[in-house]
Amino acid sequence: MTAKNQIEDIAALEQKFQARIDAEQKIEPKDWMPEAYRKNLIRQMSQHAHSEVIGMQPEGNWITRAPSLRRKAVLLAKVQDEAGHGLYLYSATETLGISRADLIAALQDGSAKYASIFNYPTQTWGDMGAIGWLVDGSAICNQVSLQRTSYGPYSRGMIRICKEESFHQRQGYQIMIELARGTPEQKQMAQDSLNRFYWPSLMMSGPHDGESAHSAKSMQWKIKRETNDDLRQKFIDQTVPQIEYLGLEHPDKDLKWNEERGHYDSGELDWEEFKNVINGNGHCNRQRLQHHIKAHEEGAWVRDAQNAYDVKRKARKAQSAA
Ligand code: FAQ
Image (cartoon, rainbow, N blue to C red):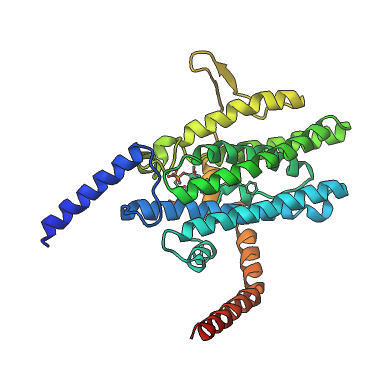
């Protein structure tokens, strides 16, 4: 086959692929896909998985200090759910032909990112409320739309994850309600957590659309179903009545209802801070990765034992088949 024929073949395959995407058909692991689609998916899905797993650390920090047995059980269950989400997402990413070990290596050497929000410290119990309410809230805005992502395993994973995330958000908001209706000190704690987590939660949706390197292709391929700015707007709008209900002050002093747009206009985010955090210089970046590496190394014996067991099991199976 000539080089020209090969290019024409790929162009025809790409056209067919795009037509399937446009017709809302799911792409499955064994289907033909452009290499750039596969790479972009591995990038986004693995970073999503890393976010779920690194995201266990800020809340894990409060399991031993939860104010009651019930709260402890709820928080423990939530953190375990996040581990599960990481596992679904790593497994879904592996269907694209990359190993879990390679994905973890990219996280640990800093070449793969994870959500900026998890580099902020959790200083008070109020932060557990703010994370569930705002961080899970912002994550859900995105994840609901990702249920319709074009890659089958990712889409199906998201459907299951969304069910659990809405419980996470409610438990966080319930913590905020209790604090906001509590003593003046408790109400102040809730306000302080809201003030610290509000802006970083808006940054979770990523840079403005005009600055977003991957959005155009990801939207064309329906890997992403909504743009960064649209997701952020949804979150801003849904959060306003929730803050009002709590009787707390909105951290954005420039927030204004825009009748024409039918949305709230928001103050500008500190994009310098965002860049610093995603480039490894947030409050907790180093601590988060060091903790992950330590836990991974300490777990080596479990992986070794599992592998040894697999080898034995396969040998036994082969022997009994012979
Ligand atoms: N943090 O071109 P774009 C959760 C990077 S799950 C860090 O706009 P894209 C559950 C981006 O990767 C939260 N990096 O990128 C939970 C890219 O860098 P690269 C995670 C960010 O992919 C709750 C560069 O900037 N959710 O929280 C961020 O089209 C509580 C250029 O940006 C997902 O991952 C950021 N915020 O759009 C767990 C959802 N934003 O890769 C525990 C799936 C951008 O070229 C406790 N992901 N970057 O080196 C997505 O929807 C997309 O990846 C976006 C970013 C929307 C996050």
